[in-house]
Length: 270
Image 1 (cartoon, rainbow, N blue to C red):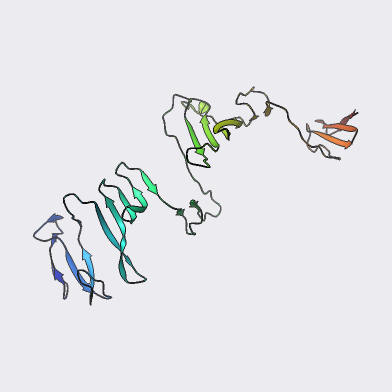
Image 2: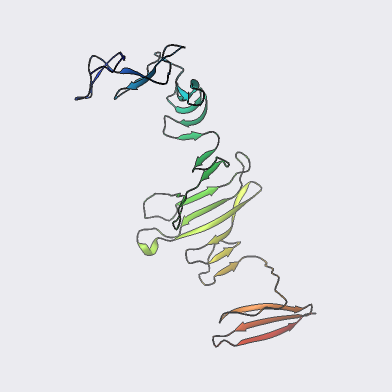
């Protein structure tokens, strides 16, 4: 390989075969200065190689690659870190902000920002998508043929303590399109136990206080309910019904028929 002007040539790599020749890499000089093996560099060095290897002791406790700080112009003792268990991380020695475990699992200590904005939340994911749909996908990719698979967003208010969850579950075996149905279930915690209190079925029925769908009514409530009717209301669409608390002793039920006529009945309260 031709040597660059004033270069320090340590090794070479055969570019035709990508095999190791008698050399491995070269350090080429330039500006501004970055030191390599000297505290007083006068030239910039650039590393040129198809493959770069970092070697340590036979049983290293850690192997760290320092990071160059472009603001201070110095190498810092933080950067890519591999510990004795071959976990790859970014941080300061064993105190890692990001770690990719040898098992393939990822660990992030701190805040994650997947956007152009500041990491002002534990997880921040934003995208400028004018006229489009910005998505976060959670999926259970198990095959079809069963209906016991779920995808959950779980909340905790203390490590190991229940704090509620939102569950998307299968309401069919997903073999055919007409069996690819799902529901959404909402849980809250009481005495450290998550219990389901509301469910939206695949057909849009809302169940409150029960997960059992009677298959007929859009709103199904298990338990007592209360509401506050207005003092003067009118049904808007054909087929709609409203309750009107006219005064302290009069409750009026109004219904708008398919012919557009509003009819009412009054209950006297005592």
